[in-house]
Length: 504
Image 1 (cartoon, rainbow, N blue to C red):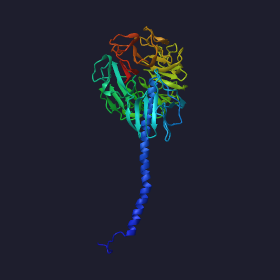
Image 2: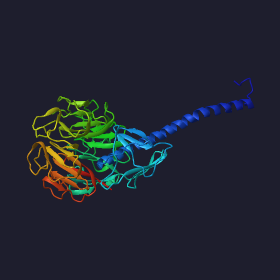
Image 3: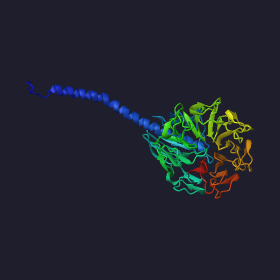
Image 4: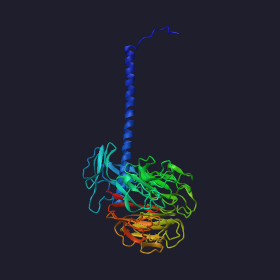
């Protein structure tokens, strides 16, 4: 039915009213949208800054350097590894100004290497660059990374029957070869226990995996193994990785931990024993700064020095005073002020800020280091060793690095992995023969590795697959130099293989 009233258009007054209403709404909503956009930009900026801050702190750690004290010309951005100081808006920062940071609220010293080179920063709140001895490390403009060359190259040697070397084949190598697919962007790697897969975190915060994937330890939703690295898990803010026996751990820049793979003993920490082919976030832990995957247990260290553990506890390796398996994180009993952790096959090692070493778990071969072969369910101080700054754990042996650059070891020594020139088990620490100026150590299975300040790599122990990288398959009870490596800064040891991370 037609309307009885004829249609008419808007009057001029009505049009002006509509226009006024639209103008008022625009004035109200535009700042809201602009604010949301700015918040998103700032969030992206902060995330990038967090990643870079962690990269810088890892750089300092790898080089055994310290970071300088705070300046009023820099504003702080909290990260769980410490506090990155970025240029404060309106402040003038000299191009030669030394980079600043703090860790766990404690001011650190100056980054200065043996040649007297300094890590410097310059810029404004809108953009800044970081340099080492004048060499550009990274450049940020409005929160976007324009360039970064702080990464390194990854090399591997040893057993390769499942593609664990990541070189595109399953052929063993008795000398180190580059894991080529990763290029020069590797920030860090870690493998341990009896792991047959490799993990690497790269500068963009992503994670690559290769080798054995029979338990879904890649986290890519499959159980398909690969012989070359490929991106997994859709990570964008990873800062560290650790490969357990058949599970993987990833530390994110916000201090949370993700896990995937085998979970028969609760080693993924999600409160279940369900295998996960894609990463899950471990509940109940935050502010984490370091992770370590053991054979079938996991460890995490908080910025406050607390150690969290979960998984298999058959020998007391979780350090909670029991032998009860835990599928959710528990706090290690009576231990604080921890600055370093390492998970072995069935024992755990902790380094405290005072340089003392504490261990718990299996001790059948003396790997606890207390002079006995009795398993310990709570952390026990290792006899006769002080001034320690780093620890590594093998299948049944333990290796530590002292502040003076010497290396000490104890436990099972059937293949010479203790490094004292014998194959006699040791229940207390002995010094590894002929090593000095060491800056990094690694151990797993029955093999031990040390990186010296000159960038050379030294290995000892089991060598059946050529994992010592000396061109032979001869076991060594004292350190031998790995062939062809001169710029090493870190290393990782798997079941029968070794990874070495080198500077560019």
